[in-house]
Amino acid sequence: MQKSSTPTLHYSKTPFTMHVLLLFVDGLGIGERDPARNPLAKFPSPFLSIFKDAPLPQLPYGGVVIPTRADMDVPGLPQSATGQTAIFTGKNASKALGHHQSGFPTPTLRRLLNESSLFKSVAAMGKTGVFANALSQDYFDRRGERISATTRALLAGGFPWLNMDDLRDGRAVSHDLTNEFLRSMGVDVPLRTPKESAKILASLSQRHDFTLFEFILTDMIGHNQEMAEAETIIRRLDVLLRLVLTQIDLHDATVVLTSDHGNFEDLSVKTHTHNLVPTCVWGSGQKNFVERVKSIEDIAGAITKALREP
Ligand SMILES: [Zn+2]
Image (cartoon, rainbow, N blue to C red; front, side, top):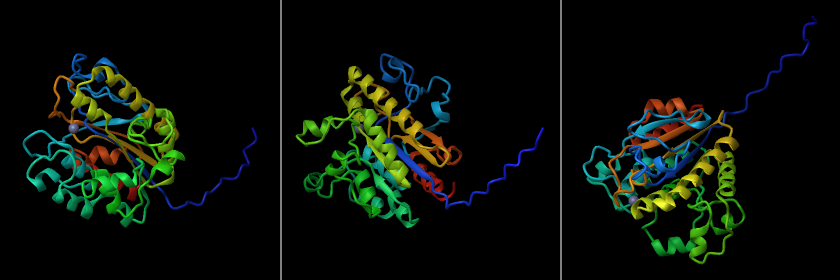
């Protein structure tokens, strides 16, 4: 048999670029496998049907789930403003404030975000960051200082926000992945399928080092206890995950899904829950997350490490 004469190819190594896509899903905890209360038991999802009274599943596309504390060692029910500030800064926001804070960041939380935003770390590393959700000038005019933790985290890094033209032209998404909410508010944007929005999100992630997406319908459905609506939302997240995990090259990317507190997983109560939240991780930075993440304030550090060291 003739020996192959094919020369060994030596590819010159280009500077390694590691992408991180953070899918922040508001109000999603790890509940009991009880279809009367937990929509993730009633409408099984290959990605999100994770239960505290069942073994942890191996997720599709090699994902792992890390059950993550959201209480920050502070009594009371975890809330959004403190939980999100913790995720986007790596600081124990509830301890800094002395309690869990709902709604939008207070002055103390704004200071934490301005000083320690994940986007600020991304910028300091000379990397690019983007918040995939489109915003409008009207949003800033109406809300003044009371903007969302995600938006403040972005601005603290000095990155521009994506606007309604970006959304119309397929360079941004809306939180519901369909644009239905904005259309109901009279904004002139096209309806999109969750799959179309997921493609836009995957493309943004491929063009930026760090990409953040915020999904809030889980928390809204949890507060409204809408079991009938919950299936639509689970399927929407399934489509999103399936698309980004097949479109993004997981050899040089990490995809992370996490939440600020439980809610959606127990529709028997209107409030948030004390449950752990799932931090689901796919791709090359997975080991780093498994080693570091115990609580939601550990996530920002794991993200900056993943961006720095492939
Ligand atoms: Zn809530």
